[in-house]
Image (cartoon, rainbow, N blue to C red):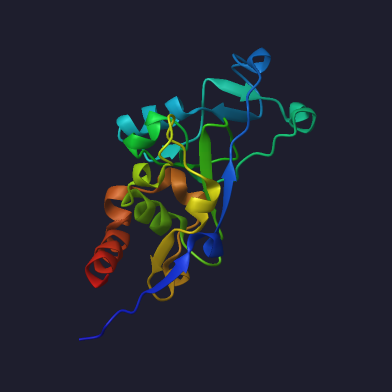
Length: 191
């Protein structure tokens, strides 16, 4: 029987960690534009309805407003989650299927596609309870530095079975993720 060897890496070695931005009240409520601007509630709503992906939101921002507001969209394939408040306890995650903006209560993990597959990393992060990572303050909060130092177990040659982020809309996670779930189970038994 062949043994699969996993290697542990820090999340910061295979992904960029990015926080969302404050969303001026004066800009909220725009129902059209170039970039959806999602909040924690939008991520939670997707997860509660059984969806793993997020591609729209009730608020939108126009391209010409990005430089004025100093906003940079999160790229397609970013894994997003709550970073402040009791919403962390829900442990919801979603993957963006288009460039999007997120508010300052959201943190995103942007996988380096040449180092790790987004789908594998999404499922791996779903196995972690982020609430235990939150600081023990009046309002629970997750620090970027804490997320960056998470140990991630990677199977050998993850990139050999990488899925394109362009295919996210058509992925049937129930079928296409079986291999990833198998690998994650192997990780948990080997550690």
